Image (cartoon, rainbow, N blue to C red; front, side, top):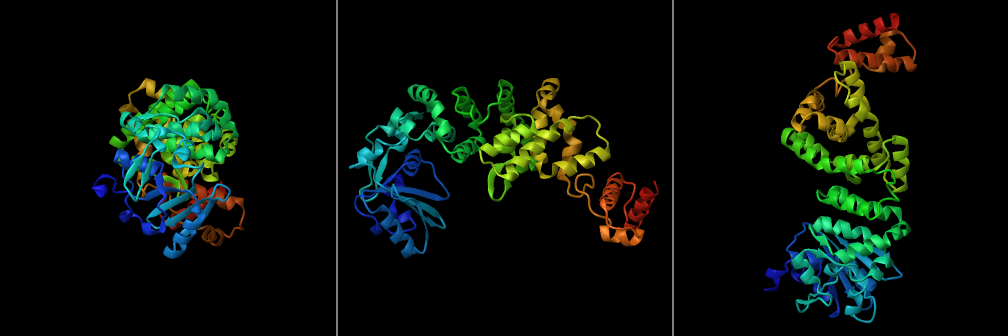
Length: 423
Protein backbone atom coordinates (compact mmCIF):
# COMPACT_ATOMS: atom_id res chain seq x y z
CA UNK A 1 0.00 0.00 0.00
CA UNK A 2 2.84 2.38 0.88
CA UNK A 3 4.39 1.90 -2.59
CA UNK A 4 1.13 2.77 -4.28
CA UNK A 5 0.70 6.02 -2.38
CA UNK A 6 4.22 7.45 -2.22
CA UNK A 7 6.41 5.55 -4.71
CA UNK A 8 9.17 8.17 -4.75
CA UNK A 9 9.56 8.06 -0.97
CA UNK A 10 9.78 4.35 -0.26
CA UNK A 11 13.25 2.87 0.34
CA UNK A 12 12.88 0.28 -2.41
CA UNK A 13 13.16 3.10 -4.94
CA UNK A 14 16.24 4.73 -3.45
CA UNK A 15 19.76 4.28 -4.85
CA UNK A 16 20.96 3.04 -1.44
CA UNK A 17 19.68 0.64 1.21
CA UNK A 18 17.62 2.06 4.04
CA UNK A 19 19.59 0.02 6.57
CA UNK A 20 22.17 2.83 6.36
CA UNK A 21 19.74 5.23 8.03
CA UNK A 22 19.08 5.47 11.76
CA UNK A 23 15.49 4.91 12.90
CA UNK A 24 15.23 8.63 13.66
CA UNK A 25 15.83 9.73 10.05
CA UNK A 26 13.03 11.53 8.20
CA UNK A 27 12.50 12.71 4.62
CA UNK A 28 11.50 16.38 4.51
CA UNK A 29 10.92 19.25 2.12
CA UNK A 30 10.23 19.14 -1.61
CA UNK A 31 10.26 15.37 -2.01
CA UNK A 32 7.47 14.94 0.53
CA UNK A 33 5.53 17.89 -0.87
CA UNK A 34 5.74 16.61 -4.45
CA UNK A 35 4.84 13.06 -3.44
CA UNK A 36 1.70 14.29 -1.71
CA UNK A 37 0.84 16.32 -4.81
CA UNK A 38 1.46 13.34 -7.08
CA UNK A 39 4.26 15.17 -8.86
CA UNK A 40 6.94 12.91 -10.29
CA UNK A 41 10.53 13.64 -11.21
CA UNK A 42 12.82 11.84 -13.62
CA UNK A 43 15.72 12.59 -11.29
CA UNK A 44 15.21 11.66 -7.63
CA UNK A 45 15.96 14.43 -5.14
CA UNK A 46 15.70 13.52 -1.45
CA UNK A 47 16.36 15.47 1.74
CA UNK A 48 16.87 13.71 5.07
CA UNK A 49 17.17 15.17 8.53
CA UNK A 50 18.99 13.15 11.19
CA UNK A 51 19.28 14.10 14.88
CA UNK A 52 23.04 13.53 14.92
CA UNK A 53 25.88 12.28 12.74
CA UNK A 54 24.30 13.41 9.44
CA UNK A 55 27.64 14.01 7.70
CA UNK A 56 29.01 10.68 8.93
CA UNK A 57 25.97 8.87 7.52
CA UNK A 58 26.40 10.64 4.17
CA UNK A 59 30.12 9.78 4.06
CA UNK A 60 29.48 6.13 4.81
CA UNK A 61 26.81 5.83 2.10
CA UNK A 62 28.96 7.63 -0.48
CA UNK A 63 31.95 5.41 0.30
CA UNK A 64 29.98 2.17 0.16
CA UNK A 65 28.18 2.97 -3.10
CA UNK A 66 31.13 4.78 -4.77
CA UNK A 67 28.98 7.88 -5.10
CA UNK A 68 29.97 11.54 -5.07
CA UNK A 69 30.24 13.31 -1.73
CA UNK A 70 29.97 17.07 -1.13
CA UNK A 71 30.17 18.76 2.28
CA UNK A 72 27.68 21.60 1.78
CA UNK A 73 27.76 23.24 5.21
CA UNK A 74 30.22 21.99 7.84
CA UNK A 75 28.82 24.31 10.51
CA UNK A 76 25.21 23.15 10.12
CA UNK A 77 26.35 19.62 9.26
CA UNK A 78 24.82 19.28 5.80
CA UNK A 79 26.26 16.94 3.17
CA UNK A 80 25.22 15.70 -0.27
CA UNK A 81 25.61 12.30 -1.88
CA UNK A 82 25.34 12.30 -5.68
CA UNK A 83 24.27 9.17 -7.54
CA UNK A 84 23.82 8.90 -11.32
CA UNK A 85 20.05 8.88 -10.88
CA UNK A 86 19.59 10.82 -7.66
CA UNK A 87 20.85 13.53 -5.32
CA UNK A 88 20.44 12.90 -1.59
CA UNK A 89 21.06 15.58 1.05
CA UNK A 90 21.61 14.77 4.72
CA UNK A 91 21.22 17.53 7.30
CA UNK A 92 21.56 17.69 11.04
CA UNK A 93 18.24 18.28 12.76
CA UNK A 94 17.80 21.88 13.92
CA UNK A 95 16.62 22.05 17.52
CA UNK A 96 15.95 19.26 19.96
CA UNK A 97 13.07 17.64 18.06
CA UNK A 98 11.68 16.98 14.61
CA UNK A 99 8.82 19.40 15.25
CA UNK A 100 11.25 22.16 16.23
CA UNK A 101 13.11 21.59 12.97
CA UNK A 102 9.91 21.77 10.92
CA UNK A 103 8.90 25.02 12.65
CA UNK A 104 12.13 26.61 11.34
CA UNK A 105 11.30 26.03 7.68
CA UNK A 106 10.03 28.53 5.11
CA UNK A 107 6.51 27.48 4.14
CA UNK A 108 4.02 25.05 5.61
CA UNK A 109 3.97 22.89 2.47
CA UNK A 110 7.73 22.34 2.93
CA UNK A 111 7.40 21.62 6.66
CA UNK A 112 6.03 18.11 6.26
CA UNK A 113 8.12 15.06 7.18
CA UNK A 114 7.86 11.41 6.18
CA UNK A 115 9.11 8.48 8.25
CA UNK A 116 10.36 5.88 5.76
CA UNK A 117 10.38 3.18 8.43
CA UNK A 118 6.71 3.56 9.36
CA UNK A 119 5.27 5.42 6.31
CA UNK A 120 3.96 8.03 8.76
CA UNK A 121 3.35 11.65 7.69
CA UNK A 122 4.30 14.25 10.31
CA UNK A 123 2.53 17.56 9.63
CA UNK A 124 2.47 19.85 12.69
CA UNK A 125 1.77 23.02 10.64
CA UNK A 126 -1.11 21.67 8.51
CA UNK A 127 0.94 21.93 5.36
CA UNK A 128 -1.07 19.13 3.82
CA UNK A 129 -4.23 21.22 4.03
CA UNK A 130 -2.42 24.08 2.27
CA UNK A 131 -1.30 21.64 -0.42
CA UNK A 132 -4.89 20.59 -1.03
CA UNK A 133 -5.98 24.22 -1.29
CA UNK A 134 -3.02 25.30 -3.43
CA UNK A 135 -1.83 27.90 -0.95
CA UNK A 136 1.71 28.95 -0.14
CA UNK A 137 1.77 30.06 3.50
CA UNK A 138 4.80 31.11 5.56
CA UNK A 139 5.67 29.33 8.76
CA UNK A 140 6.62 32.66 10.34
CA UNK A 141 7.86 36.12 9.43
CA UNK A 142 11.01 35.48 11.46
CA UNK A 143 11.87 32.48 9.28
CA UNK A 144 11.60 34.58 6.13
CA UNK A 145 13.77 37.28 7.64
CA UNK A 146 16.39 34.74 8.75
CA UNK A 147 17.00 33.89 5.08
CA UNK A 148 15.58 36.68 2.86
CA UNK A 149 16.08 34.56 -0.26
CA UNK A 150 12.92 32.82 0.91
CA UNK A 151 11.08 35.99 -0.12
CA UNK A 152 11.96 35.25 -3.76
CA UNK A 153 11.41 31.53 -3.34
CA UNK A 154 7.79 32.21 -2.48
CA UNK A 155 7.20 33.50 -6.01
CA UNK A 156 9.26 30.75 -7.60
CA UNK A 157 7.36 27.98 -5.79
CA UNK A 158 4.01 29.60 -6.51
CA UNK A 159 4.92 29.62 -10.21
CA UNK A 160 6.23 26.05 -10.24
CA UNK A 161 3.28 24.61 -8.35
CA UNK A 162 0.54 26.84 -9.73
CA UNK A 163 -0.30 28.00 -6.19
CA UNK A 164 -1.51 31.28 -4.77
CA UNK A 165 0.27 33.08 -1.94
CA UNK A 166 -1.57 33.57 1.34
CA UNK A 167 -2.39 37.30 1.80
CA UNK A 168 -0.64 37.53 5.16
CA UNK A 169 2.46 35.94 3.65
CA UNK A 170 2.26 38.34 0.70
CA UNK A 171 2.05 41.34 3.03
CA UNK A 172 4.99 40.07 5.07
CA UNK A 173 7.10 39.66 1.95
CA UNK A 174 6.39 43.26 1.02
CA UNK A 175 7.34 44.42 4.52
CA UNK A 176 10.63 42.49 4.43
CA UNK A 177 11.50 43.26 0.79
CA UNK A 178 14.45 45.53 1.66
CA UNK A 179 16.24 42.53 3.22
CA UNK A 180 16.73 40.97 -0.21
CA UNK A 181 19.82 43.13 -0.73
CA UNK A 182 21.60 41.16 2.02
CA UNK A 183 21.44 38.00 -0.10
CA UNK A 184 24.35 37.06 -2.37
CA UNK A 185 23.55 38.17 -5.93
CA UNK A 186 24.15 34.74 -7.44
CA UNK A 187 21.49 33.21 -5.16
CA UNK A 188 18.97 35.81 -6.30
CA UNK A 189 19.94 35.15 -9.92
CA UNK A 190 19.13 31.46 -9.54
CA UNK A 191 15.62 32.26 -8.30
CA UNK A 192 15.10 34.75 -11.13
CA UNK A 193 16.25 32.05 -13.52
CA UNK A 194 13.58 29.65 -12.31
CA UNK A 195 10.92 32.30 -12.87
CA UNK A 196 12.22 33.19 -16.33
CA UNK A 197 12.06 29.52 -17.31
CA UNK A 198 8.48 29.01 -16.09
CA UNK A 199 5.49 29.93 -18.24
CA UNK A 200 3.77 31.25 -15.08
CA UNK A 201 6.90 33.08 -13.99
CA UNK A 202 6.12 36.41 -15.63
CA UNK A 203 3.06 36.92 -13.41
CA UNK A 204 5.09 36.25 -10.26
CA UNK A 205 8.08 38.27 -11.43
CA UNK A 206 5.74 41.21 -11.79
CA UNK A 207 4.37 40.57 -8.29
CA UNK A 208 7.93 40.50 -6.97
CA UNK A 209 8.61 43.82 -8.68
CA UNK A 210 5.43 45.35 -7.26
CA UNK A 211 6.66 44.36 -3.81
CA UNK A 212 10.07 45.99 -4.44
CA UNK A 213 12.00 42.71 -4.46
CA UNK A 214 13.41 43.26 -7.95
CA UNK A 215 14.04 47.00 -7.80
CA UNK A 216 17.62 46.67 -6.50
CA UNK A 217 18.49 44.37 -9.40
CA UNK A 218 16.43 45.82 -12.26
CA UNK A 219 16.05 49.51 -11.36
CA UNK A 220 15.21 50.47 -14.95
CA UNK A 221 12.28 48.09 -15.48
CA UNK A 222 9.15 50.11 -16.25
CA UNK A 223 5.43 49.49 -16.61
CA UNK A 224 6.05 49.10 -20.33
CA UNK A 225 8.69 46.47 -19.57
CA UNK A 226 6.09 44.33 -17.82
CA UNK A 227 3.55 44.88 -20.58
CA UNK A 228 6.04 43.62 -23.14
CA UNK A 229 7.07 40.73 -20.94
CA UNK A 230 3.43 39.67 -20.66
CA UNK A 231 3.06 39.79 -24.46
CA UNK A 232 6.16 37.69 -24.95
CA UNK A 233 4.50 34.39 -23.98
CA UNK A 234 1.66 35.10 -26.42
CA UNK A 235 4.10 35.79 -29.23
CA UNK A 236 6.08 32.67 -28.31
CA UNK A 237 2.87 30.67 -28.81
CA UNK A 238 2.39 32.28 -32.24
CA UNK A 239 5.93 31.32 -33.20
CA UNK A 240 5.27 27.75 -32.06
CA UNK A 241 2.24 27.57 -34.35
CA UNK A 242 3.94 29.09 -37.39
CA UNK A 243 7.61 28.19 -36.95
CA UNK A 244 8.06 25.05 -34.80
CA UNK A 245 11.78 24.94 -35.57
CA UNK A 246 12.25 28.51 -34.35
CA UNK A 247 10.16 27.73 -31.28
CA UNK A 248 12.45 24.80 -30.50
CA UNK A 249 15.41 27.14 -30.87
CA UNK A 250 13.93 29.47 -28.23
CA UNK A 251 13.81 26.59 -25.74
CA UNK A 252 17.47 25.69 -26.18
CA UNK A 253 20.03 26.77 -23.58
CA UNK A 254 22.46 29.52 -24.49
CA UNK A 255 25.27 27.07 -23.75
CA UNK A 256 25.58 23.58 -22.29
CA UNK A 257 27.00 25.10 -19.10
CA UNK A 258 24.26 27.76 -18.87
CA UNK A 259 20.64 26.96 -18.02
CA UNK A 260 19.16 30.18 -19.44
CA UNK A 261 17.26 29.58 -22.69
CA UNK A 262 17.04 31.98 -25.61
CA UNK A 263 13.47 32.74 -24.51
CA UNK A 264 14.89 33.57 -21.08
CA UNK A 265 17.40 35.89 -22.73
CA UNK A 266 14.54 37.74 -24.43
CA UNK A 267 12.75 38.10 -21.10
CA UNK A 268 15.89 39.44 -19.43
CA UNK A 269 16.24 42.01 -22.19
CA UNK A 270 12.93 43.53 -21.10
CA UNK A 271 14.03 43.81 -17.46
CA UNK A 272 17.33 45.58 -18.01
CA UNK A 273 18.05 49.09 -19.27
CA UNK A 274 17.60 49.41 -23.06
CA UNK A 275 21.16 50.71 -23.34
CA UNK A 276 23.41 47.68 -23.83
CA UNK A 277 26.20 49.31 -21.77
CA UNK A 278 23.94 49.87 -18.74
CA UNK A 279 22.33 46.46 -19.22
CA UNK A 280 25.74 44.83 -19.13
CA UNK A 281 26.51 46.39 -15.74
CA UNK A 282 23.15 45.28 -14.34
CA UNK A 283 23.69 41.71 -15.47
CA UNK A 284 27.26 41.63 -14.21
CA UNK A 285 26.02 42.67 -10.76
CA UNK A 286 23.74 39.62 -10.80
CA UNK A 287 26.71 37.41 -11.80
CA UNK A 288 25.31 36.38 -15.16
CA UNK A 289 27.84 34.63 -17.39
CA UNK A 290 29.65 36.32 -20.27
CA UNK A 291 27.60 34.27 -22.73
CA UNK A 292 24.30 35.40 -21.19
CA UNK A 293 25.37 39.05 -21.02
CA UNK A 294 26.59 39.03 -24.60
CA UNK A 295 23.33 37.45 -25.75
CA UNK A 296 21.18 40.10 -24.04
CA UNK A 297 23.29 43.05 -25.19
CA UNK A 298 23.50 41.73 -28.76
CA UNK A 299 19.72 41.43 -28.94
CA UNK A 300 19.24 44.93 -27.54
CA UNK A 301 21.63 46.40 -30.11
CA UNK A 302 20.15 44.61 -33.12
CA UNK A 303 16.39 44.81 -32.56
CA UNK A 304 16.18 48.32 -34.11
CA UNK A 305 17.98 47.06 -37.19
CA UNK A 306 15.59 44.12 -37.49
CA UNK A 307 12.64 46.47 -37.68
CA UNK A 308 14.04 48.27 -40.71
CA UNK A 309 11.85 47.56 -43.71
CA UNK A 310 13.31 46.27 -46.97
CA UNK A 311 16.84 45.50 -45.80
CA UNK A 312 19.08 44.89 -48.81
CA UNK A 313 20.79 41.52 -49.16
CA UNK A 314 24.04 43.18 -48.15
CA UNK A 315 22.40 44.61 -45.00
CA UNK A 316 20.86 41.22 -44.22
CA UNK A 317 24.25 39.56 -44.56
CA UNK A 318 25.84 41.90 -42.03
CA UNK A 319 22.84 41.55 -39.73
CA UNK A 320 23.16 37.76 -39.66
CA UNK A 321 26.92 38.03 -39.10
CA UNK A 322 26.28 40.27 -36.10
CA UNK A 323 23.36 38.37 -34.59
CA UNK A 324 24.69 34.82 -34.90
CA UNK A 325 22.86 32.38 -32.63
CA UNK A 326 21.08 35.23 -30.81
CA UNK A 327 18.65 35.43 -33.75
CA UNK A 328 15.74 33.64 -32.03
CA UNK A 329 15.85 35.96 -29.01
CA UNK A 330 16.21 39.03 -31.22
CA UNK A 331 13.33 38.15 -33.53
CA UNK A 332 10.89 37.58 -30.67
CA UNK A 333 11.85 40.94 -29.13
CA UNK A 334 11.10 42.63 -32.45
CA UNK A 335 7.76 40.83 -32.70
CA UNK A 336 6.75 41.96 -29.23
CA UNK A 337 7.72 45.58 -29.85
CA UNK A 338 4.75 47.79 -29.01
CA UNK A 339 4.68 49.77 -32.24
CA UNK A 340 4.68 46.71 -34.46
CA UNK A 341 2.20 44.74 -32.39
CA UNK A 342 -0.22 47.66 -32.21
CA UNK A 343 0.04 48.38 -35.93
CA UNK A 344 -0.58 44.86 -37.28
CA UNK A 345 -1.75 41.53 -35.93
CA UNK A 346 0.56 38.83 -34.65
CA UNK A 347 0.12 36.69 -37.78
CA UNK A 348 0.88 39.68 -40.03
CA UNK A 349 3.97 40.53 -38.04
CA UNK A 350 5.20 36.99 -38.46
CA UNK A 351 4.76 37.35 -42.20
CA UNK A 352 6.69 40.63 -42.06
CA UNK A 353 9.69 38.72 -40.69
CA UNK A 354 9.08 35.51 -42.64
CA UNK A 355 11.90 36.05 -45.18
CA UNK A 356 14.52 36.57 -42.47
CA UNK A 357 13.20 33.67 -40.38
CA UNK A 358 13.28 31.39 -43.42
CA UNK A 359 16.84 32.39 -44.17
CA UNK A 360 17.93 31.68 -40.60
CA UNK A 361 16.22 28.28 -40.51
CA UNK A 362 17.69 27.23 -43.87
CA UNK A 363 21.27 25.99 -43.30
CA UNK A 364 21.97 26.31 -47.04
CA UNK A 365 21.00 29.96 -47.22
CA UNK A 366 24.14 31.89 -48.15
CA UNK A 367 22.93 35.17 -46.64
CA UNK A 368 22.37 33.77 -43.16
CA UNK A 369 24.93 30.96 -43.35
CA UNK A 370 27.66 31.85 -45.85
CA UNK A 371 30.23 29.31 -46.98
CA UNK A 372 33.79 30.24 -47.87
CA UNK A 373 34.61 30.06 -51.56
CA UNK A 374 38.31 30.81 -51.03
CA UNK A 375 40.59 31.10 -48.03
CA UNK A 376 42.81 34.00 -47.08
CA UNK A 377 45.92 31.99 -48.02
CA UNK A 378 44.48 31.30 -51.46
CA UNK A 379 43.85 35.01 -52.01
CA UNK A 380 47.38 35.88 -50.89
CA UNK A 381 48.85 33.48 -53.46
CA UNK A 382 46.45 34.26 -56.30
CA UNK A 383 46.64 38.04 -55.93
CA UNK A 384 50.24 38.21 -54.69
CA UNK A 385 49.31 40.36 -51.69
CA UNK A 386 50.56 40.46 -48.12
CA UNK A 387 48.51 39.62 -45.02
CA UNK A 388 46.76 42.78 -43.81
CA UNK A 389 43.35 44.03 -42.67
CA UNK A 390 42.57 44.45 -46.37
CA UNK A 391 42.53 40.66 -46.69
CA UNK A 392 39.60 40.41 -44.28
CA UNK A 393 37.75 43.09 -46.20
CA UNK A 394 38.23 41.14 -49.44
CA UNK A 395 36.88 37.94 -47.86
CA UNK A 396 33.85 39.85 -46.62
CA UNK A 397 33.16 41.37 -50.05
CA UNK A 398 33.42 37.91 -51.61
CA UNK A 399 30.90 36.55 -49.12
CA UNK A 400 28.49 39.42 -49.78
CA UNK A 401 28.83 38.98 -53.55
CA UNK A 402 28.14 35.26 -53.14
CA UNK A 403 25.04 36.02 -51.02
CA UNK A 404 23.84 38.44 -53.70
CA UNK A 405 24.23 35.72 -56.33
CA UNK A 406 26.96 37.55 -58.23
CA UNK A 407 29.59 34.81 -57.86
CA UNK A 408 29.50 31.09 -57.07
CA UNK A 409 32.93 29.56 -57.79
CA UNK A 410 36.46 30.02 -56.37
CA UNK A 411 37.61 31.39 -59.72
CA UNK A 412 34.87 33.99 -59.74
CA UNK A 413 35.71 34.86 -56.12
CA UNK A 414 39.35 35.55 -56.97
CA UNK A 415 38.33 37.63 -59.98
CA UNK A 416 35.89 39.56 -57.81
CA UNK A 417 38.58 40.26 -55.24
CA UNK A 418 40.86 41.47 -57.99
CA UNK A 419 38.21 43.90 -59.18
CA UNK A 420 37.72 45.17 -55.62
CA UNK A 421 41.47 45.80 -55.33
CA UNK A 422 41.48 47.71 -58.61
CA UNK A 423 38.62 49.90 -57.41
